Length: 203
Length: 203
DNA sequence: CCTGTAATTAAACAGTGTTCAATTAACTGG
DNA sequence: CCAGTTAATTGAACACTGTTTAATTACAGG
Image 1 (cartoon, helix red, strand yellow):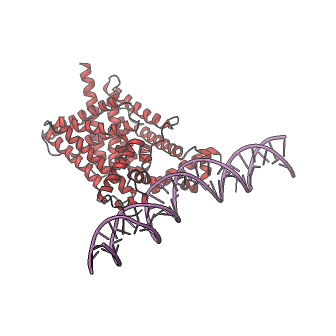
Image 2 (tube, helix red, strand yellow):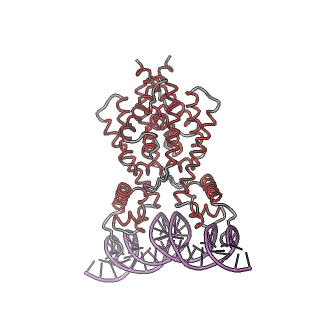
Image 3 (cartoon, chains in turn purple, yellow, orange, green):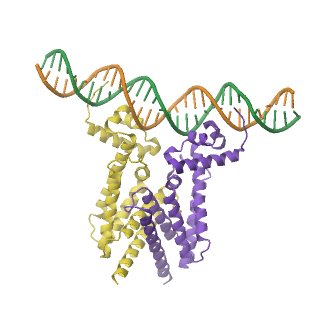
């Protein structure tokens, strides 16, 4: 068999990404292999290199999809809210829920190491940077102060840290419920700290 | 050549761990391979299975060494201090400094996935749990209140999160200096939150 | 219809972790 | 001190990984 062309290259790209995500969700990152993806879309390994330079580029595409899915859920969760503090909490909750519900995909997105200097048009950090800016904006509205990037980074990384330790069983506390409580306290404390800092700066 | 016995099994185990750490520090996690370790200690691959069941068990041993080294630095940093808040800050600084100075070893310790149910006498999470308990104790002294495990987890995971995002270039802010500032604000905010919570509980 | 282009495959390559028969040095008992 | 046993070490094999490439062969254009 050769030259079937029953799918465009873009279709095949999409199929591959979906197949890869399904594999990770079903059998974990360890099972994500070039041949496994190829088998799942009904092609042989070589064909994958028609739509991706590397296997790492396929993983990158999967990760971009994951982060954009996280972003989508964050936006959905904040859609009906106006209060910046409520929005920040909703964002934190959405992030945590995704991480705990899809640990395989989430860890792949935040742990995968691209071979040096091959970050391509590093679209992944662009996405995370965009989330950071969003959080930074909301925090600015909340404190009615000039951007406090330090506080924004604390908020963003604080929630991320809870997710990471929880997913790797190193939080010290087990279970989704505990993780959520920690996230809540984390968000409250960091926001309060930022507000206090802004108030002090005004005086 | 066979049966040289110019090293005890324990010596070989130690040599392997040291070789593995050297490889990770010099060429990154990707270069950490069974044959590379064997070559570095002057043996062939098969010999590695004399001191480790799996390659994963070698990695686990490396990670245990890493976390114990982190712990050692934390204790050294707090040795001359008595104020619990000062100790907590010193712990956070020591942790962050290690993570940023040895990203390869640090990421390996906190990102490596053991094959299911093979966590062995899961000594690694025992160590991180011990750090968590230590932090929890200090926080208890600080707030003069019954243990607030939620706050302790927030503190521990907050610092960890800054390190992880910083090391993976996803913090939103670049550089060691910025990361340290975020850690400082993080620690201040979470401690303040815990104190406030304890005070409210007393009323 | 026929020809040229190009997608797809099968096979090979170097690398990975892992296993195991064979070798042979070191230990043990006489 | 020597023979026999034990066991550490090796080298070759295995199944797997990502990647490359020559050979197919279906499709598109004239």
